[in-house]
Each structure stands twice: as C-alpha cells, then as structure tokens.
Length: 289
Length: 339
Image (spheres, helix red, strand yellow):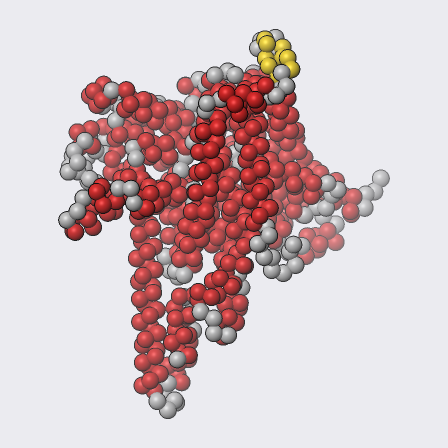
C-alpha cells in the first residue's frame, strides 16, 4: 500500500511524539487518575492493598481540621502575590538596562543567569539559613552609614528599605530565566518602530509605554506564567515540603494525595485566572492570534 | 531645540543607533552657516550620552554585586576558621585561610560518591532529554496529524501540575517495579521526554522548529526524503542553538532537583549530591537551634563547613557554566523562545 505524502506525514508525526505519549500515560495520566481516586479512599491494609471509599472526608479534613494546610496555603499565595510582580518588574528593568549596553553585555548576562545555575534547593536553604538577605543589607549599607555616623540597624529597621533588600535575595534567585525571556522579547521588537516614533517626536518615556510595553505583552504573559509555576512548585516551597513530608515520611498516602490534589486545584485556578485577566491586555502584532 | 531632543532620545533609547548621526554631523558642520552652535549642541548631546552610559554602568555594576554576593559570601566564609566566623571584625577576608572546612565537608557528605552519582544521572538525563526532546518537539512543530493541537494543550496542562500531586502513585508505581533506591526513575523518564521540567524543554524545541523556514523541508520532500530523514539530516543540524540551551537547562535542573530523588531514593548511600547538600543543611539548622555549645566545638558543623558543602555541590555546574556561558547567551537569542 502506498501512502500519500499527507498520510506519511501524519504517521511520522505520531511516531515522533510517541515516546512522550507513552510517558504521558505511564508517568502522568495514570498517576494523576490514581491520585484523584486515592484522595477519596482510605487504605485499610497497606500490604494487601485494600481500600475503602470515604468520599470527601480527606478534603473536609484538609480545609477544616488540618492546622498546617490553610496557613501555609495562604502564606504561599501571599508570597506569590508579592514576589511575582516584583520579579516581573525587576527582570524587565534589568533586561532593559542590559539591552542598552553594547560591549560587556555577554558578561553581564552570564552573571544575571548565575542564580539559575547555582540556585539549587540545597543552596537556597543554606543561604537562607544563615540569613544572607540581612548580610547583604549590612555589607551594602554599613560603609555608607558609618560615614554618616549611624548604626545600620537603628536606621533601617522596619523601613521599606529593609523589606526590599531582604526580599531582593529571594527575588534574584528566581529572575534568571525571566531576564532571558525579556531580553529575547526586547530584541524581537523591530527598531523601525522606535525610529518612526522618534521622527514623530516621541520621548523615550513615551515610546516605552506606547511601543515597548504593548509589543512585549505576550512575553509578559509568558514570564508571568513561568514565574508563577516556578514560585508554586520549587522544592523549598513550604506547601511542597509539607505534602512530601506527609506522603513520604508520614506514610499517610491517601491524605497526601488529597493534599496534592487540593493544592493542584488551587494552582490551576490561580494560573487560569491570571491568564484570563492578562490575556485581555495582550497585544499581538501581525497575524498571530 | 530639535537637536537636543534628538540627543536625549539617542542617548537613552538606543545606544547603538546614537553612533550614526555623529559622523554625518561632522561632515556637514563646515558647510553650515553657524558651525559653533552645531558643535555646542553636539557637545551637549555627547555629554548627556556619556553621563547616561556611566549611570547605566554604575547601576549595572551594583546589580552585579547583588547577584554575585551569595557566591562571594560562600567563598569568603568557606575558608574561614570557626573562631573567625564568630569574630565580627573579620567581614570578608580571612586572616588565616584554611581548607579544613572543605576536608570536613567532603568527608561528611561523602562528596566523591555523590559527585559520581549526580554526574552519571545528569549525563543520562541530558542525553535523553536532548535527543528525545528534539524529536518530540519537532513532532509538535511540523508534521500535521489529527490531534496534534489537542496533545499540545495537554502538554501545557502537564506543566502546571506539581510533582507532589503525583508523588504517591508514582512511588507505588516504582516500588511495584522494584525500582526504589535505583537510579532508573531518574534516568528513564528523560528518555520519554519526561525529565525534570520536560514540558518546558519540549516547548523550547517546538518554538525553535516552528521558527525555521519550511522551504528547506519542502525541497527535501520533493526530492523524496522521508520525514525522519528530513528531521535527522536537515532540521537537527540547524537546531544547534536550541540543543545547547536545552542541554544546559536540563543539566542544571536535573542536578539541582531534590524532589524526585527525595521520593525514590531513601538510602543515604545512594543520595544525589543535591540530597546530600540538603541533608547537611538540615543537620546544621537543627544543631543551631538545639544548643550552641555542642556544635561550635567539634568543628564539623559550622557555617564554614556549610558553605564548603554548598560550594562543592555547585562547583561542577559552575565550571561547566563558565566555559559554556558565551555560547549559551548567544544561543538563547537564536532559539526564538518568545516568538
């Protein structure tokens, strides 16, 4: 039998994606379905694997009795709500500054990506456990303050400066990939747009708001989603740690599954909401929709 | 008036374009009726530009410091002795630098065993994720087949599911296959495109292949090549920038991952380097909270050892990154990640 080019193409298409589909079935769909089922069940015999149906009991327990889940969840959501916008602004700012640099850009980009390379869970935990945020604050401001004859602690304590600088260390760990996205996005904006605006007498400030931001809006959406996923699923996230602890060390398998499903639901709703709101403001130039 | 407006626009918006008007101004200057005024404007424009550049660099160097701070801090602390850490008069540079902390660190976490484990696991993951990822990514990008868009939506969906949601069934799955405490759960999934953040890798490849002109493939099809041959002999050699980016990302993400190893490896002898680092950090935090005397005397648990452990753990990545960063930063522009 001779296949037409179109049939041949679809056949090879399936062959190309087949390893991933196999993985999808074994490593994603099956575990997800089983996790969902397990969250409605209770294991009566772990070795014989006997289970009984308990309905929504675990979920009721999570939201009413669990003294860890709700506070940690609110904490995580608060962190996302604060950190993601900060990461967005910070990485966009750095990307803008970097594209303004001619020579030396490669070096600076390498430095700004460094946190991604070395930012393993262990390292982050190490650095946070010795309080690097405060160390940075002290070492930057101390010479300055001593010049003015004041103590750092007394001046900075409780001010926004302290808040920002201690937050900054958390932010730089998560900005590396975002900066790369923004640089790539900035480089893809045609320079002719800026030239045309300049001829018409636009100031850099105006062309940033009227050209850079709209042209960059698809990238902003992408970076937001990436940053959110990053924040919500990194290993040191307290929620992730809690679920892993319940499941792996506590051996409460069905409860861990229910926790996992509940958390996933929250993550899903959150990201869907943000995408929904943000895509109203996204501007696509050209034919893409 | 128009010259100054031009000058500020040039100086800040587009540094490279600012070079262009200068030569033409120099040529036309003698022909103009009042050359002095023109040159004064030019001087002012140049001053603004230079000042802008200086300001830009000052800001950037400050950020460089913030980014390098953790690394510098690690290096400075790891060579200090325990007494020096508690001495507030020594901020950065140790007066008697010693490698004692490194010796403690490498023996406590059994560094070379962890190094061997992490290196082999990461190497396998990089190989699998790159080869299979390129293939699957190409499959999502070019050949048209029914259900492609649907599968791609599922791919996007898989990215936002956190690992803990799947953790329990995955654990049961691997223990049924008797694969707990083996490296198979870390090595095999990348060969199906399901390594650490595999979904992101597939998207990188898909975006890259979609950005390539399709005329190349059409020509090959006219000459009678099969889709596999087109992928293997035409598209793959063009994908070098994407491959390099994916290799580095996969290496970094696999090396730094502690979630999946934490699930499937619970024998401390088989811990990956990342798990060993995490383990020591926990030990340190516990000792610090329990009592101050016990840990300050032995010398095996201290901030200098903690920083040595950290430094040793990321050293291989750091070395690889230093040698590849030039190609890496060039490649990332050409992957068309954000098109």
